[in-house]
Length: 289
Image (cartoon, rainbow, N blue to C red; front, side, top):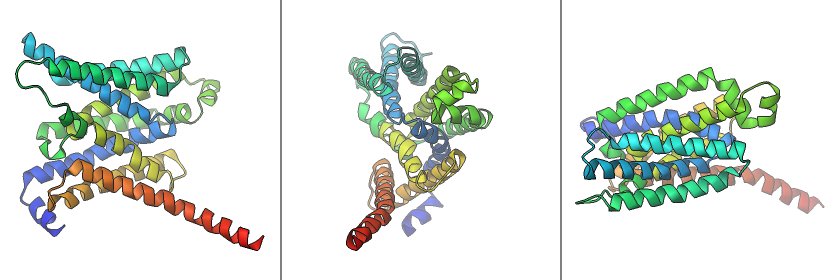
């Protein structure tokens, strides 16, 4: 741990990675709280794998047809927003279960991405790099992208806090209050899609899913309001990403996997700790009876 702090003062690579983790944590705390409360955490994985399809298609057309203007990020954004709109429209209009739609898009997006990537001439892009990412490869331009995402997420969260909260907690109550549920639900899905796109390019699909769900799940055990959950989830996410970088430095472990294992271990401890009083109470009453 001491070696990490010494290296942090000298290495710009570690400084950028640490800052990237802190910036990513802000968006994850806000958006993650909404999707956990709405109970659509599976959506992060579905959209993230659709992003792979957009990335693969953009890289293919860029390489084969010399479409230099077609940046891979454009394909990722298009695929993510398209997936978000499809999920929203089908679940709202067709009254289909969201998990069924998300599961279908998950598989289709992944398959499209792999097919396009394998058809790229020359050395193909490694899909594993998008699955697990590498926060140590973050650039200064990525930091600006993360900062812009945080500004957008915070601005929308502040302006539409009450409406999004109503839609996430009780859709029928929101309708009775005159809130346009369809608009705000699609807004939430699109905002989630943009968050996933930016974070996938920085930390990979698996870490995005973990940061959007685990810190919020932990915060839910200690918070009574949505805004408290957002704040605590963001702080926890910052702690996990920072600690993950520090712990993986000396043993030369992958930072993404280390961060996920750390967050998962804390989540399990919190869940088990919350059950201990119930177990003790049940045992005591059992003895009395």
